[in-house]
Length: 343
Image (tube, rainbow, N blue to C red; front, side, top):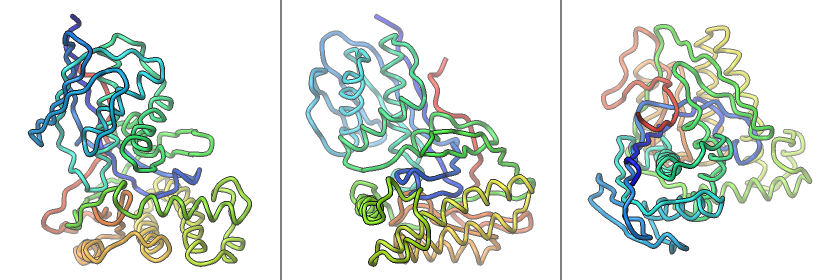
């Protein structure tokens, strides 16, 4: 029997560029220290036994054609099925899952779980390491086909390719990824939970994706990456507003990269505020609780604040100057390394 393996995958914070990934746009996420840990141990037989230690729940299923399930079990079964469908062997195993990234907080606990599961199972089988972009696509299929959330690749790529002190500029049309130094000096990024939990599969996330696809179809373009504001303005409501958000959000990503290069924190804060206003007014993914959290951060002195993740709840991100005191319940986030199999 091979030795047990342990894999860790981090969650992520998206500095700017929200809902752009499935529109072949731009984003600027970074990995964080919190994440999901999966311990996989080979066992005899032809089954996978899974335990979610934080939830004190378990599961057991046959390796061959795992049946559909709901909740965390869908991720485990989907990982086994998608690995096998990709020609990657999967051993009978006992899998233990734990984590410290909050679920439903917009910090991508789902992608962290997918990435940690697949890394652990690949390592346990002794299979070759996979190209990170291809593995991100496999993990996205777990979320799309097994969990029911029609997400893009942002979360998985951020979890797999994060680096200390850097954000990732991701171009989802070319899949070109550039490491961008996230050097804030005495400024800091903090997150504050709104109090509303969100679920990509259960919220309006899939509706927004359908609306963007419909807007692209109406405009006769392959994705909203190719759309213009002038053309978008002629779309019927609410497709005009959905397209406007994507177009202007892509522009804000490159503006944020330029602001970071100049160390212009005032401009970065302005861009965060503009992103949030667009997500609230054009994309309509905010909630009253989210708005209160944004207001709290501004009252504490934040130069800018915005909702992060799929929306409809979760965390809010704020950029705090050196002399500001972040509100109670908030915590600082810093960019950290990506997913790995532990020694």
